[in-house]
Figure (cartoon, rainbow, N blue to C red):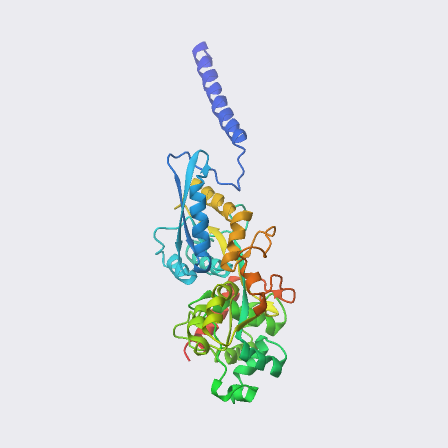
Length: 398
């Protein structure tokens, strides 16, 4: 081998070593973790667009205003957060039809039930979830609101005298009373028992109520597909749902109770935060006060912060969304959630104190700590879809 060829191969070898060494040094100096998305080096502010469920939208919007005013940065770039309120089912439909425009960096739905349902639709199309349930970018709860019974005091007294407690079985028996309220011990002009819960195809709280009913029926917290497809359970649930006030509108809220009173319903399993923020209006508008009771098996909304994991948003935008999520979980921001009837997700933040609606309405049955309830485990997507299919076939068309 001549001298020129030797020098050529030496130069090539040194070049390869330099390139390889540079790659190794880059990996070591960056401390790369395969579970963390590294932001790209881009110029300008990072824009985080968040779509938020209605019950927490005002709180999240106020937090975003504070966050933006504090001029937060990530790797030297400013972060600006925009929050758009949107009903949970509306957002679900737009995701599933590819109509979410612009595509949010993050979504705060009412419940992880909605995350499961959206993921199920994308698994069918893409073969993967678009929102994660583990890892750094997993969904994390921002606040908690239980589903509780809201019942007018006059009706609650009759039900407790007749059945001893307020439960799904009590509601079932009241709904099935042929003679209506007169048979139960109430006044004849009250008519028949009317249940105020949302159509589960139009509002996720209706689906959560069905899950809670299944928990009480089976006396357990983890509901399976076999449970919800059991014909005996389905008939029991159908009899309860037959007392729903109206299925056409489908989105009954506590605001309807405040505005329309008994015509909306005698009782309903409704979102605790909605009950609390509307309590003043109910108490001042109607002579019959509304009382809150907590079921033995309770479903809840956790308003999870979910980051879109598709390529449409950059790594830097995803990490900026994480920064805002962490801000929402700080003690100061969590404390502000109490004014909206929300339970803080941060366990270090007490539920009592200044501006707490839990303190204000304790006389109406509101409890900061609910010791007798058993928390339902979040059902998997197959259970949720089975309940919705049953509803479509057996209740929605009646």
